[in-house]
Image (tube, rainbow, N blue to C red):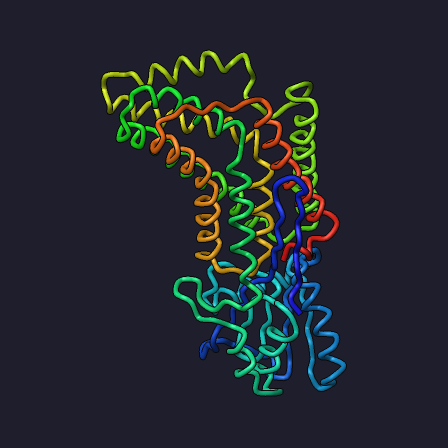
Length: 384
């Protein structure tokens, strides 16, 4: 039975999200020097990996049902010899992004574990215990780019879009964009508004994508670590708490917002950029401004991209899939800003972010960050 992850935000957001992951099997290799018999399973795992825990429990059941099967359990992080063997077989099978749990059965390699119905059937099929091919094909779709995706997997794109949209409602970047649009609208030139504001939104998304890519690679390099999960969860809880605090006590005490003292000078700089006579110089200035604003914005919303990329590494995906989900996240992230640009272009009307709007946005994003951080610490299995 697939697990359900249901996140409720009593203000604006009601999300029902179903998690799982792609199970990826690699075909047999003729050149593998494997001294292990075909009735033996080499199980590569790591303590703190939720998928590994599910696989561990399943293998206990399998041992009971089939006493003739031998299972060699290898903790790839606690033992150097196990880690070397893990790296060796990944190289021989051409696995670009190794992951745990992994299973070596005879001359076949399986990465990831979903549940007994899907992954368990694949393991039995590799052992020659039954014919599970029909069962598997009913539960998987072969899609372009993404490859084989199980029915349960449909929840990850929904989760990605939802968190990306929430992340996009960030008071820091939205305030700058609204100031930019309020000045641009005075030009009464829709093409110029689209070019300048569109450049700002696109560059903002590109910078954010690079930032999230860095987070993802850090987590992939470090690997599955319970300590890392707790650290990221605690940081998310701290950031979320500060945002929630801002709803009740706006910008008093510790606050992750653009200081009011910096806003007048920022407004003047934006105005000078827009009214520059040289269009090329305007574009260059807008690009630089977008980069700088997003550097500042990272302080406002670092919790969501950090915790999302940590959750993403818990899923068993290949390299291209990780980056495709980051692209999907950033499309959702830019949607909010793109929508504002579209409204202004269509109506040529000014919009200003009031303090109350900022408070609600802080409460929304803070609640999501706080709850995800709490889940990452207390129940990370719900995020899979």
